[in-house]
Image 1: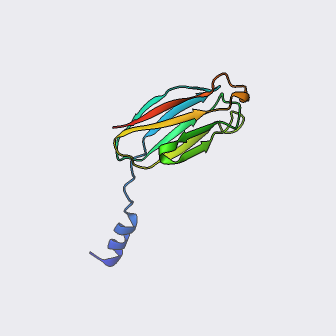
Image 2: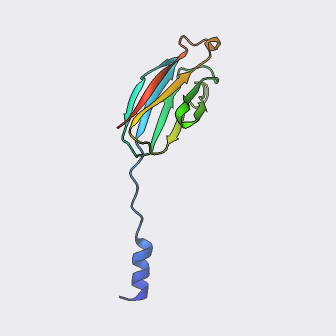
Amino acid sequence: MSASVLAVLLIGASPALADPLPIVQLGFHNGYCSTTEVGVPANTAFDIDIDTTFQFTDTSQFRIPALGIRVILPSAYFNPHTRVEIGPQPPGPIPFELETPWVSGSAGKGCFGTIQVW
């Protein structure tokens, strides 16, 4: 095989595309959570997508204390989605919190939930 043919074969070879990360969907609307229990596979990174479409304050937050994660959530007036990347986790529960100040005008104050890693 000539060097030019080999070079074309090597240049034309594309790397294998990685599978997309699993996405956990959470909704936080008017101080209430759409779900408080979600599951993901163990030892696999995943994303958490938080929809704040009907959350009208920019002082709400998402927290996973065990992992040192604290994210201020956007209000519905801006981009009402936040994505949080979580690295691979061993099997077991991961508690999370979605909270908003009572003075924000929201009907609810937030919730506590669990990500079950199996």
